[in-house]
Image (cartoon, rainbow, N blue to C red; front, side, top):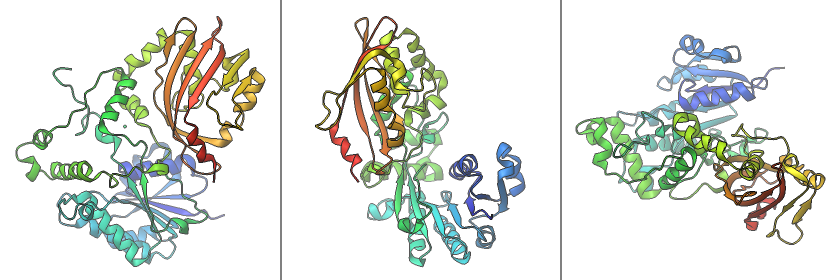
Length: 430
């Protein structure tokens, strides 16, 4: 059987590499994976364990002829362009080269193009924001010529906050995409612009969740443009292309909001949460918070284990099934459950039956960190938020929980009471 081919442009960069790694890990048996790179020999040498799963071919968005050859025979294409640091409109031309190559490759059924909101049009021409404008102009051209394209708008990269990057947390006074496409019916998405984000947070919220994850008190402070530009060198705001591009981007976000100020709502992707990203990139900072777990009471530990069954980003303190955490006559209750919804389950068998269907109903993408607080000797309370979706309807299920647990002398839960926003049950309705 001949497998469909996906051609991935930019496979040595952050976005393209992420797409390449995802297909190698999850779809290597279903697709022929083609990496389109400037130097196939050098790129293949760096692939490691994925080498046998990937075909490396030469292609460059600055060379339209090379792209036509690279896309020939491919049914799916992922493509993106790098920011044009010359501010001369090159990125739009690169996008046009990609579009023309897709149009000339009669085999392509779907192009997924990494684009961005049109900051220039949104701002009425007051902001240049070249890294947004070039992609948006390329998107308009793709729509105009009628190629089968879907546009994803990645949010502000978490990588912008890693050590050494412009948005990294700094010491003051010494003190880190996926939308699932229905490949059986790609036409339903043609021409759509899909926001692609893992978390939707303000900068103060980033700081607050940083604190929960690391235990390090942060401060979120708006700085001036001069302060931002200073590390780039003299006259960087006008002379340094990277600084100029970043300043324009921040001006656009501050004045108009990343997606015109509108949250993506149900289009959040099942990707890395901010907390998981922080733990991954600042392990030395995050470890003090993790070490606090050794001081938890049995009740704090029990309620943490309960929620970590659903939070797959946490490997520690997990068990396979909620009923394992409960005493034989343990009780789960939901005082605010609406009429027609079971509000109490007594005994481990009833508890097991209640939770047995969860994996077929819920898809959880991210959870805020657990910070359970002790209540006396045998009790604990936790406030926690999740982001996810309902598998049967595809609707977003973003919920806030308050859980209260009592445990016996063996650390088994005797009473667990949970409060949540009942209005979110509307996600179950098609």
